[in-house]
Length: 141
Image (tube, rainbow, N blue to C red):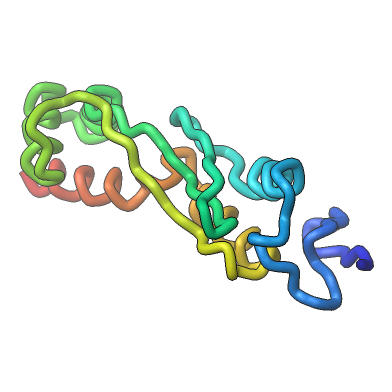
């Protein structure tokens, strides 16, 4: 294995001459991959190992917190935004739900790193598109 310097100037062990697959990683290396690449998310999140050696990212989406934040940014009443969230997302109530994103075990580590970084590029993490969708609906009125 050799280290490659990537654009941010950091050395990463998962950029190798031969693409390593997630299903070949032991738990500590898989955790390091997740911790180095799924960053900046404000919501509670965790990861789990899949039977095929893949990784599943789990993130809590709290509709009440989402409603408060969207209400603040759009000027709409919080209860109105809560009702909008339940309607738009098909929720029965405002209880927290778990969002998941799975990366199969056959995925190359460098590709998994890219996917993790992409899905954590905003503080909303896996819920970023849902926040945008609700904000747009709230602005439309």
